[in-house]
Length: 397
Image: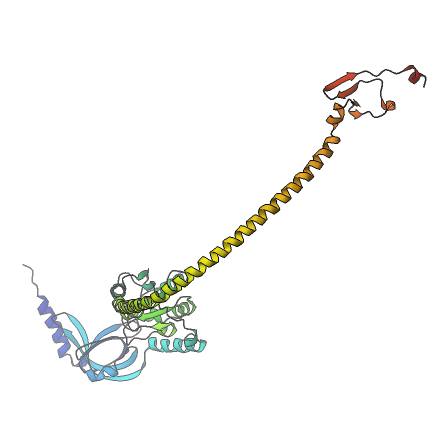
């Protein structure tokens, strides 16, 4: 049978090595603080440099003011191997502030640059709409942030729409995705306001929101933007550029929605007051209205009689003038008909006259006759063709 040792035996053995090695006690460790959190009187954080990080624990709450995100510290302490969990921590008992960490220094430089360019000016910040129907949220679809926003918003106002634009919130190219999401949502007419949100974290975790590309996208956005990044104590560059900063994503949802229960109570009170005033108004006006109606009825009746008399008079005048005009026009028409009758060719032919044509031309004179072609002679009741014959006297001419 193969020899073995238990996990507890191994962990205890490793712990004894750390506990008994004098060289590992009271070590001054230099690093940048990130991922600070508190549990009762214990401070949990990590120290990091360019290539490594180390989890740390501090049981001295008085040092909390020194152990802040991004600070560069020399932490005195000893490594401790927690045998039950098989986890290594560096127990800190004293700290010395050396300066700000690299990330924090970059944060301050960018903040100063953008502030000088006017990206933080309050005068250019857009007002947040009062009646918001649709909220665009830029965050990860997998985190708790979007659910927190939905829960708070829909609890207060179940009619508000939440439109999610799924992006990374940290890691490689997260800032590019966030900036692109802001640019895209800026063009969407049906969105009233945009919320850029993520949960809390270390300065490194929030680094995407401390970038110039996100800051400029926020500044150029056509829609009002609310920054809801991290916890209440976390500040990022986007907080200064945004039109409004919310301490948390849930707070953003609360700021942008109206509590319908409160509005309902206000509406009911206004409704009762309005109904009371309306009833009083109606009662007061009824008596006035009845008096006006009685007076108006008599006045209108009189006006109708007057108008009726005027109408009948005008109607009689119109009939008379119309008949006169019609008679005059009938007389003129008779004259025209008589004149036309006199000059009507058929009427002339009816009297015994005839019309002579040759070669589609009317013959008015004897000398116009062509003795080689027929003549067409038109009578009242028809037409005949005849060949002209020269008289002897015509032949001698």
